[in-house]
Image (tube, rainbow, N blue to C red; front, side, top):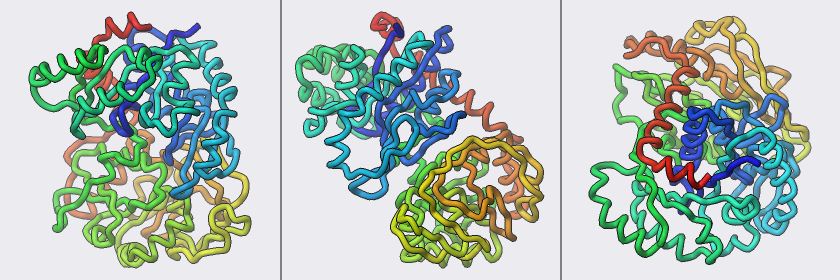
Length: 481
């Protein structure tokens, strides 16, 4: 049997995903075969495996940290919110249907066999399985049918590391309050506490840690420093979504505006640009931010029709159409669909009916019952103007969409580029090539030489692992295993 350890958090966005990734990397570096696992993930960022199945993007990142191929067994249940009270439910990589929160809450216990079957598949080859929880184990209104926190830990008899985020304040209350709300048998499973995202002199925490250990009866096994990393982060609370431009255009820096759609998905497609020194990326819902940008990207969406309506009502559509007269606009997946003349929904995949698009590409999209999921490889067609440097360049990526846009994967019309391919700029130095063209058009120069994004990601995973290894009691972790 595989050895197992679980990382749970006091709330969302405390850093569970990255800590699981760090442990996967550390165990890999130490010579073990490692698999990440999250029984249920709610996220709009997803990934398609080699066999065409869908899982959370964070588990794909963790698999990369572990040096293994992402598998749907690492995330058997994926929930993709379609509105404020419901989600698309994906089990073992396949869409089951849409459910309200209440209906799913009543149904989810039926998925335990699927969860355990996936877990047992990983046990066939992994020396160590690192499990990630979701939200908090102290959500007392959800505990009775829990399948992702202490319920999951009980199913596989996993020791638990509980993580709190000191950067958001109140970390001692987070950790101690969570312990207090656990049942005695759940509390017994918590074998270590971790304080994450600390800035400053760790010795200043000593008195607080002593009191925490005395009251909680659980050792603090690590204080992890705040480390700036460019690693895929699927959480909607990500700091990356709160970047902003100054009021004045920076003539020495390429500025890219990413439309922060209400149902934004797969915003990790933008990450390669964020890693280029001399490029500023701003996720924005303010049409005025568009004016000073050098390029606009409309990312993926879980609800194209609803987000297109928001674009129209917010003034973002008008701003983008003015911008596109002279400067480039890129649409990816849902953003690509919005760039066309019309989106039709005859089968009520989203809201039914049809809606006028931005009209920047002479194409129409029809939403279909069957979701298309596939990894894909190819070469850019001949590109012109600002996109000329991409001509003939090889790409690999993946597609996840219900829409059919006249069978096209990539198209350019003037200043407009549309594509269905997620991760298309992750390849080699494609993001750098495009950023260099933007810099040349602006009359400035990028501060760095060409960057291969895949090599950069591997270096970031090692940086993450080193920071955690140096500040976590790994001898104690191995004893738990």
